[in-house]
Length: 93
Image 1 (cartoon, rainbow, N blue to C red):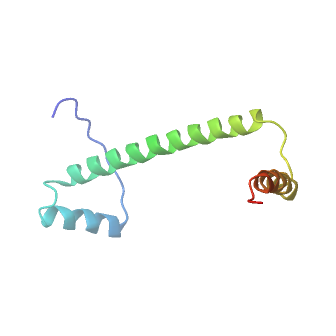
Image 2 (cartoon, rainbow, N blue to C red; image 1 turned 180 degrees about the vertical axis):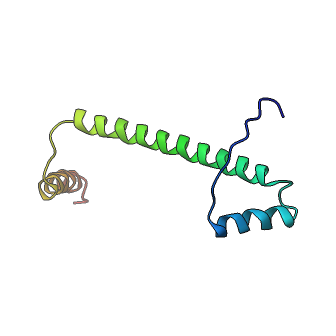
């Protein structure tokens, strides 16, 4: 493995036991593999979080750009009135 840097990490007793068990069961070849996978998962989750935050920002901006908010009951009344007008024009005689 090229460009490997050794670091020391302090774990709780429970985390260390989980890591040892994963290695002893054959799921991983070494504690280093366990840590590398954990870091890859952490990196992936951080990237997902960043994407979600960016999307929320885009949606926020779109909401602001869409104009002033309308009170819910007022908006539903306008929609209902338009639907009623459409339906009344299409009712059989």
